[in-house]
Amino acid sequence: MPSIIIVGAGPGLGLSVARRFQNDGYAVAVIARRPSTVAAVIDSLNETAPTQAAIGFTADSTIEPDLLAALDQAVAVHGVPDVLLYNAGVIRTDQIGDLTAAQLLHTYAVNVVGAASTAGHVGPLMAARGSGTILITGGMGQPSSDWVSLSLGKFGVRTLTTLLAQTYGPSGVHVGTIAVTERIAPDTAYDPDVIADLYAEVHAQQPSDWDLERIFTPTSV
Image 1 (cartoon, one colour):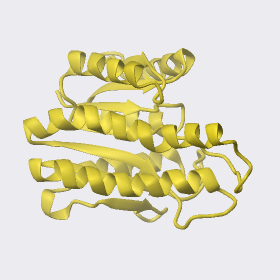
Image 2 (cartoon, helix red, strand yellow):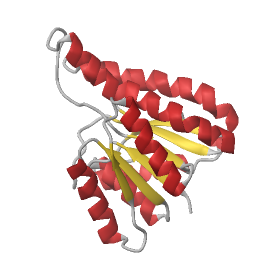
Image 3 (cartoon, rainbow, N blue to C red):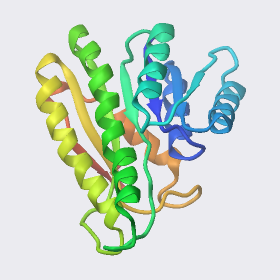
């Protein structure tokens, strides 16, 4: 059975992507920072697909030993995933000087460093197998002085995606980022269930069509 691991699986986009792949027959493993978040996502998934139980683990993406342990547990249960999604992020408005150095470093750790740790741990396993997809949720069309920490994080994700593609792409691993540039909300043009279809579409691409970045628009799927 194919499988997906989602780091940063909250009740919005993370849950929608998990359900989208679960509906396609994937075994799902989710990782989130709060036990209550993990429990809510797992309960929702298992309610809609009780015969295909999802599994969940608690880990903070900025605490590397915990993150890597959770990834190892997921791999131990479902095997090396076919899809690895890093969906964790800190989204807030802030301007230059608003955040302390510690706050800015923490935000960058969630938005970029956690993604690097996640991909750097599972990517070699995918490369050794010769297949797989690593996706990172990105966003923002242009940097904004009203969104300093997010600008640094999302443009860091773009660079990280390029570096990961250079590292694992030659071994058959597709690396890409899905950029969502507007607020995600149910029953809007940026409904998470609709956006989730784009993740499945990118994963299904043939090597000749691999995208390094796809920007979601309401007409893109």
